[in-house]
Image 1 (tube, one colour):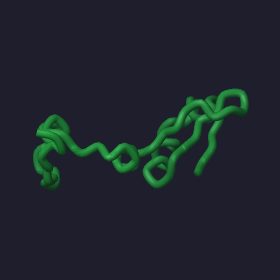
Image 2: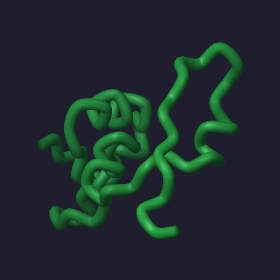
Image 3: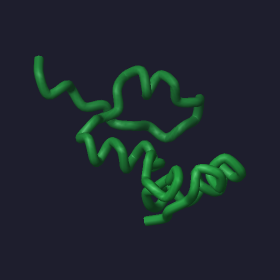
Image 4: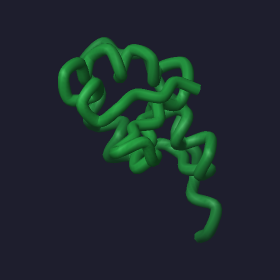
Length: 74
């Protein structure tokens, strides 16, 4: 778990995004955690969310195929 101040985050968002690919990044304001930055894959695992047809349609041409599962409720 990486912790950065809001100032550090604002000065180098790209670095925080790179770290967030592998682990959550906690952003603090006056020493207190206020936000968490994580990859979309981590978020989806955490919430149980799956890719939607909209996500798949937004993929650029030539992107690897993704499996689309039917919704849990019909």
